[in-house]
Image 1 (tube, each protein chain N blue to C red):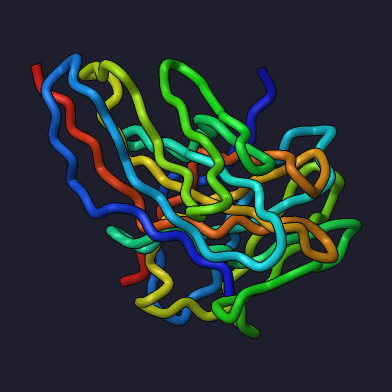
Image 2 (cartoon, one colour):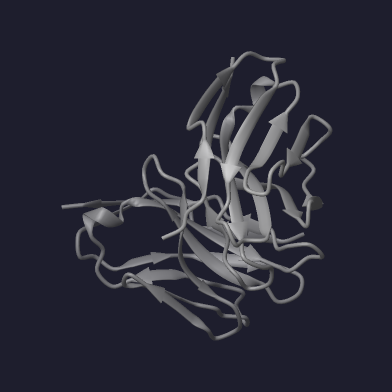
Length: 114
Length: 114
């Protein structure tokens, strides 16, 4: 069964450093998402991406964040200058289309900023 | 804005007990409703969904009915097993211009003991 994959599973970085989190969505899906979950808190929407552009973003997704689909298979989330409060589990998700279709989640990347 | 409220956990049950996890929502428009499950150390997996009023979603013995009049989507299972121990997230999705973001509740941890 096709699945969403994410790398790395755990990333440790120092405050102020740039990080890139990578995701490979399910191949025939068209909509891509990033969510994050700070330890012990709810899963929060960050951004949705369709047709090579951002379709919606949350207040969390400020200028420090960017997304890209560089080669038609990978979907990346970049944080330019990490802060301690960026420490969280980041989930990538994909969906074949919008509407009632469910999103399929990857296993997540745990980002630890020290 | 859209929101989801879940009962707080942890919920601790004995094996074969009946499970109910309450979920209510606030949304503009007509959302789709989902239950996702997160097993320890893993990502989010779709458990079941319902897309319109009075729909019943079911999977692996779990059920939830979309109740528009009470804006609820309570999760139930007649007989839980130790393997059901996980965190359960209620979520809603409304269609926007370029996708449909998920809005999650805070999650309810379920512990099932022998």
